[in-house]
Image (cartoon, rainbow, N blue to C red):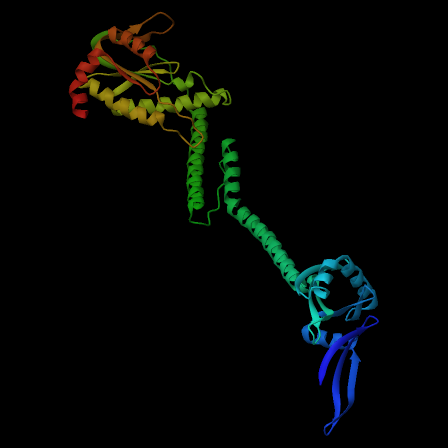
Length: 400
């Protein structure tokens, strides 16, 4: 017996033929056939998961002998295959399979393969078309892609929200510190920074609290001294004349040039109050080194030192005053080092009466030398006359 396919009127049939023989006598041939229709195509689809169609040519036209598609989609498939005659000719005429081809049905993408269906004599009887929907096959991947995109977007939004919250929490001490600094610049030292951490921000808060505490103490002391001075009796004025004298002195001049151009933002009373504090410190340092304040003219202060090693005393006082006056009083202070000049030599001192009361006066070459040195000096300079250099040469040589 034998099995084969044949086509008739656009239909595909599978047939089997067996001879009818009894003994050695041949009586005929029994041929049995059945139509290859949608039932067989759907059975194959259930096994493979692929939509299947059988292609035949009848009277020069392409027909779908059987298909797993409905009637409308089958007609669309016939139209698409009619436009892709190269694929159909390759399978039905040349007997070559097409392992992969892209088709479009109902605005959807399909991946197709075509194989020839051959008979016993290797003649192409029909073609088998298998198609798989790319959109359905990729639907799971698209869901995963959308899920990953949604998860990434959610993670990004969560990260932004978390970073915003963390930044506000991290910068809160800095905002408090900025607010307290602005109030301190306006003279309000009553605020303090709550310190609940031990990192750099915490140490900065502790340092700022310490600074505010010092400023509060100074302000309280100033208020106390100002109140006390209003209740002190006025000192009696007495005209005292100093006797005329001539001796070797060391004269130390300090010029506080920061007061030559005071900041316009400061009140005049605040400027004079700062100058008073500087003069008190200068007086205290000069007394501790055996000197005294001879005169104050504007922002220039003249100190005198006499006795043994007067020049060395003046140098020691100058070094201490330089460090003291160049150091800012607080974080908002803009300190400037003074100009310092030192001269030594024979000086005449005494009192002169040219007004209602006598005034003390100093005369001599050292006084004139101070004027010359001050004109040449800049803030931070320590200038010496030639005589002072000669007297201090051993000290300067030892200091290197």
